Length: 159
Image (tube, one colour):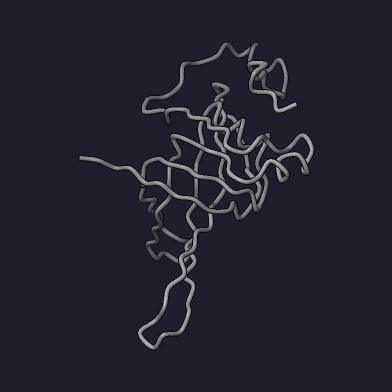
């Protein structure tokens, strides 16, 4: 079977990053996509779709560093069905995307205008989503600092 989805749109909120006990980053946000069409009566209409996104590892850290609410992105990944029981006992579900590749879109002016929080347009970052739990990090390493160490290649720095 094949499970692949590609979406282009704007982020609806800033990335929320948290870290697992092993030190792996997990980022959450959502994307808004839209399509314009003419109805049967000839009236112009617009349909907007909101989809939750989950980033893992280095992709989550890069997304958190460079993207903000309203940033234009192109993502591809796997479609996932989340199911839970609400407090009132009703069963709920929603679709979300586990991001495997991220491409930052927008003009160079947008990237330069936002200061250090924006990356150059067209930069692509990918990180395979974990299919197995990440290896354990020694407790001393995890507690050494609340700020994770990010290994960035000098060619990736936008200035």
